[in-house]
Amino acid sequence: MKLKNIFIGAGICFAFLACNKNSKNAEITISGKINHPSESGAVVLEKWEGQIPTPIDTLAVKDSTFNVNSDELESGFYRLNFYNQQNVNLVLDGNENINIQVDGNNPKGVVEIKGSKSHDLLDKANVFLEDFRVKATQIEIDYSQAMASGDALAENLYTAKFDSLQNTIQTEIKNLINSNEIVLGDLQLVGLLDPDKDINTIDKVAQELKKKYPELPIITDFAKQVENSKKLAIGSKAPNFTLPQPDGKKLSLSDFEGQYVLIDFWASWCPPCRKANPHLVSLYDEYHSKGIEFIGVSLDKDKDKWEQAITDDKLTWPQVSDLKYFNSEVAKEYQVNSIPSTFLLDKDGKIIAKNLRGEELDEKLKELFH
Image 1 (tube, rainbow, N blue to C red):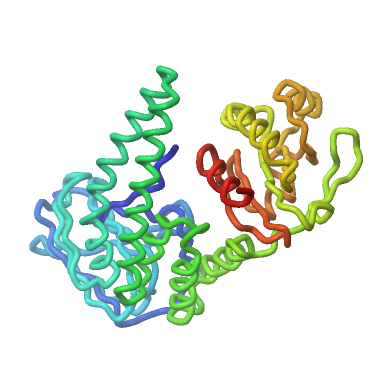
Image 2 (cartoon, rainbow, N blue to C red; image 1 turned 120 degrees about the vertical axis):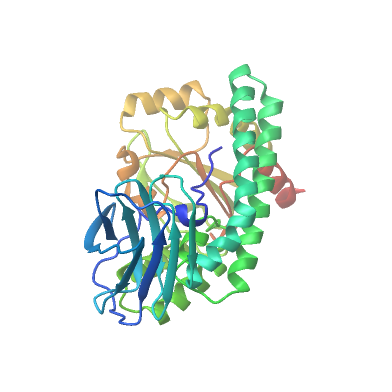
């Protein structure tokens, strides 16, 4: 159980964003006041270039105020660095007159941003995100304590609480996105959504931003990622694959059309996978004869360790692997970035559920076979 990246107000992290050659917009202006200006150092406007903010201008400060009005400013993601003491991330949406009030001498100092549609949106999100972060952090602490003490019931309880909390926050995020104009700040909000369940909302943001900023690299990249996610959305046909089994014979997903299939991405070196295997064994014993096949796709690198894990965990369903770890083409095609990861397919090979574990998987199989 792990929290997604959560941002609060002006403390948004843009390090994952790439802002290269964007559409210029001469109407963007930035002005502001520094409550505690320093006698040394400088105020620097930076633009996020991948993981590194690149300095593009040093601002003159007079009577504690500053102003930027440049025809070189472009829509995108920026940062104001105040004397290497306080950093303020900015989303510039074009045709905006942004005013900033900042302490300037404290990394956690007060920041107030006006005139930005994106920051207005993120301020609204901040209202419920702060409460969410506090509650989620406490749940993680309780979960860790339960796991350390070996209390499986408590682990399940806190996992359920966390899932419920995430569902609540994702509903709030979707409502916020759908009730406001789509702006660049929405890229931060969709990062808190679940692509498995919320692909329509995420796609809406991608399509609207692509219309507004057709030449902005981060938008075109984002739109491509969304298109890839849609290929694995619920209701989509699962991509076929062919991989070798331990004995070297090839097995294809298409061999199992006409029956339900659970694809389980796992590995011998993955403790959560090994911990989940006894439950999968019990489910296989119960439901295999009723019309479902399991396929284990291992991300192992060592064939001996893979085969030993199959034996030790008593995995009797088909197992395949190209022994390429996360470099497996199948893992890439299924966009598997962590394991265990599962895909449940119907008799036509369409995805009907993803990443079901424990009681969720129990309930889904009962629904299908009872």
